Amino acid sequence: MKKNIIYFLLVTTALLSACTTGKNALRQGNYYDAVMQSVTRLRQKPDQQDARKVLQQAYPLAITDSKRFIERSIAGTEPLKWNAILIEMQRVNQLAEEIYHCPAARQIIPSPLEYGPSTLENAKEQAVKERYQKAKAFLEAGGRENAKTAIMELQRVLDFAPGHSQAMAMLKQAEEMATLHIVVEILPYQQNKYALSDEAFRNEMNATLSGLDRKYSYIRLYTPEQAEKMNLRPDQIITVDWVAFNVGNTNTRQTEREVTSADSVKVGETTIQGVVYPVYNKVSARLNINSMEIISGGKLTIQAKEYTTQRILSSIAPEGSYVWRYEWGSFNGDERALSGEEKAICKNRPPVLPSPQFLFTELTKPLYDQTAEWFGQYLKRMQ
Image (cartoon, rainbow, N blue to C red):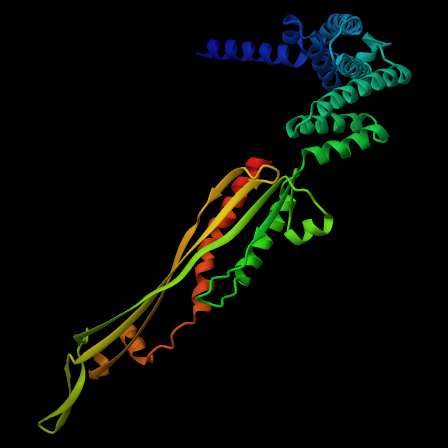
């Protein structure tokens, strides 16, 4: 058993050593990783022989591979070859940087290869030109998706060259092409039967739309007033309109029942041999409860259309309802027979009926939830 443990420890140590010194990477032909791992190991233990051997073997091979890749890329016709060349040069310089900051590694590789600032700058200029031309080609192809791809390419150009004026101008053009301009018109309630205000609903929706406008990079939402002021020619128009609102039948119900107290309560006294004793018993009462409910219903229609063709892109008709309930009552008998809830009902007075405006405002709450959900899903799809 002891021999097995010792053998396991030796094997584990050997495997860990191979990983940390870069031996495995060297064996698999990953010369860059082999150099990085061996240098890391030499920082921890400068006299580690395996790491020194790996570095001595792997570094020349890594440089040979990089030079071959760069030479072939220069001679090739890949559309983004200079971007790949620049990355490879930066990798070579990273190896040199790691070696320079490790005394043990510098003893083995005293003069690592480095590409100078002018060489890197030339490669960067070529890489910028490639990205710019690629972005230009996507933009000239037209369409929102191509414009989005052009934006990504131009952002990479500006990462390399932050002051590139042509890229900045083209980026602005691409962002405009990628952006969907949508006018959202929430039509007011205009049914003749009731003079109602949907202000609460409209305020909630405007707040939601304002948040969605900030959320999506390539969508801009406008009110009809904003669009008219800007003389905007939108891509789409979304209308939210009321189809119907009704105050349904008023349903009333009266129930009468006998109720008895849950526990015995004091109902009197009795005197036995001159001593007064309380008398306990359950008590009852005749309970009358009146209940009333008013059911209101409403329906919206939401429709998204292309502005130029008037083609319907999406439509939905959210429906909702609100039930107003009220109870009041009276009793005849001992109040102690009533439960707490029954006492509260009996304290209520006959109701003052809610106004159509109150019912309408309450009804808009579930309709708002459905409408906001539709807008969130639709705009996410359009983004």
